[in-house]
Length: 169
Image (cartoon, rainbow, N blue to C red; front, top):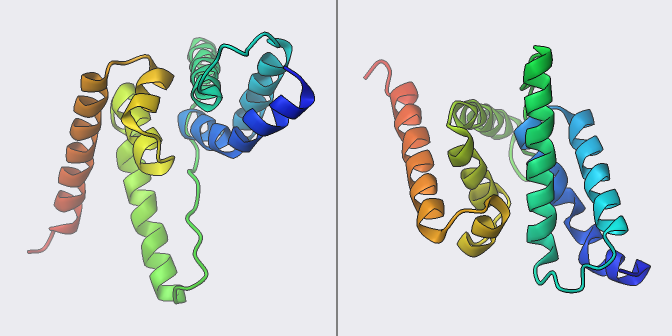
C-alpha cells in the first residue's frame, strides 16, 4: 500500500475507528492508542490490495485490539468504563441540550449493561451507521446473528428506558 492509497482508503475511517474503540474501552487515551496501533498495522501490512472493504477490515482490527486491551485490563484488575461521548448540537436551547445530554447518558449507561455482542452491534448500526453486511464482516457474524443481536439490544434498551421514564404514573 502506498501513501496515496493509505490516505484515501484508511485515513477517512479514523474517526469511526476512534469512536468504536472508545465505546468498547471507555477511555479516550486507550482508544487513541488502539487507533494508532490499527494505523500502524495497516501501513505495515502493505499487501492489502485484496481487501475489498478497507473500513470494515480496519474496524475488525480495532475490535480485536480493543478486546485484547479489555482482557489484559481484566487480568490486571483495573476498572473499565469511564464517561461516554457527549452529543453536541448548537441549534438547541440550553434546556433542550441538557435534556438531550441526559437522555444520551442514560442510553449510554443502558447500552453499557448489554452483553458485548449486542452492545457492539447496536453501536456499529445505530451510532456509526454501518450496514448489516459490514457489521457481519467487522464482528465476524452472519446476517441473522447481526439482526437478532440488534433486535435484542434495541428491545432491552427500550424496555429499560420505558421503566425509567414511567415512574410516578
